[in-house]
Structure formats: structure tokens, C-alpha cells
Length: 288
Image 1 (cartoon, rainbow, N blue to C red):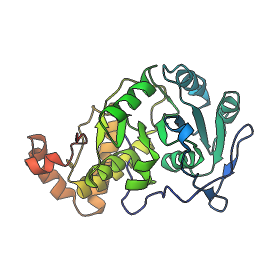
Image 2 (tube, one colour):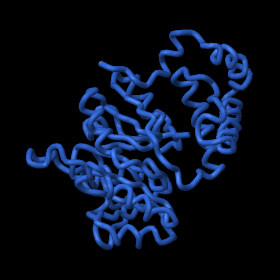
Image 3 (tube, one colour):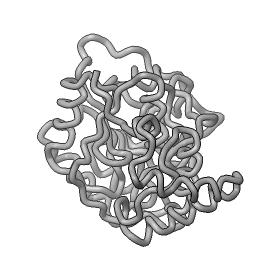
């Protein structure tokens, strides 16, 4: 499962970020932001910033950072964004060759956007704070991003590659739990190209069921807005328990907007194939 944002609540790209962070880190607040970094000079073009949003991942962060440092194509700078961490995550991050940035959001997408504003390079590769990726991860994302002239290349969920120019064109990530799905749908709606690789990965920690419930609430809103099937297939996303929690969230989401009966009525039509024009809206890969 991936989180998605509401169209009315997007994080701006160009406004601000906290002070430079490194070594001891820095705390970004709504009152203390800096302008978005200037355009990348020619000698730095083609360099890559990796961004890792982290919230209390001390039990797995060493392994995650090991996987990042073992990439066949290493990132040129790594920004670890520590959001309200109360465990040893900050200590672990400071022991590595990376930039540490402390933020107080309680929101993954906002943490990612803080890392974007802190980054020096146009090419961005996003990692997950509790997921292992193979050594070819960065290289494969960048290859597809260039070969397909894509705006965004998704490996899985919040793990992806894109350029800052894509964020400037389509807007920043929203603050919803399903921020990734919302972003992919928004990019496509605005004429951009999203390539989904469904790459291999190892999730080291399951998502809390409460978060999966929020995924479902967001999904119900996105299904209505973008013409998606009213419910996703249970057992195909994050496992049976998280998917059932997300399904419950979707039911509640449809009900609170008065769409429960309509969503149930349309369910069988969607899973028999659905109208072609509606199905096409859910296709996230549109080669140019």
C-alpha cells in the first residue's frame, strides 16, 4: 500500500526549508525555512541526491543504510530526514557519510519535501527508511528515467526517481498518507509520464494497522476523484492484515461522503473489467 494526498493540500516545492544540516543535524520548523536552492551549476548536472525519510527506524536503519551504500551506482549525496525520532535513529545516521536533517512534521511526504529542499542536485532518488533495495536500484531507476523520458519512475510505493523539474511542473508531494499514489495520478492527469517498475524489495517492518486504515480513507477519496475502482484487491498490496485494515478505511471513506451504496454497486462492474474509458484512467504508464 502507498499513501496518497488530497488535491487541495499539496506541499509547495519552491518555498522553504530548514537551515543546512550536517554532523549535528538541524531542526526545520514552519517558522524557520530557507529559500529553495538555486539552479544546479553545469559541473554538477547528472549528480544524484538520495533522500531517506525516517521515523523511529533504529532497529533497521543500519541495514537500510548499508544497502544504500552498496549501490552499484552510488548517490552523490545522501540526505537522511529524521522526523520526530525518539530512538537511536539520529545517532545511527550521524555515524554515516550523510547529511542529517531534523524535522518536526509527523508526516512522510513533508519529510521528503524537506529533503528535496535541502538537496543540491536535480536528480532525486527516494529510499524508504525500513526497506532494503537491491544493488541495482539507483542505476536502474536512472536508466529508465532517461531511456523512457519519464517524469517519475516508481520502484515500489515511495521508492522512486524523479527530477526537481517534475516537482516544479506538477507540484510537490501532498501531505496525505497515500501521497505517492496521488502524485502519480496527478502527474498523469496533467500530461506527464509515470513508469512503474514493481521492483524487488524487502520490507523490514510492517506498516501499523492504523496507518493502513488511513491509506484506505485516502484511497476512497482518490477513487472518486480519479475514477479508480472503488476498492483495491485485498491480499495484493501489503499482506492480508494491512489490506483488510485499508479496506475498512475505504469503506468508511465512501460512507462518510455518502458514496457507500454507489461504491458497492459499481464493485462487480469494475472487477469484471469495467468501462474501457474508466479503466484507462488507472493506467500509470504512458510512454511518449
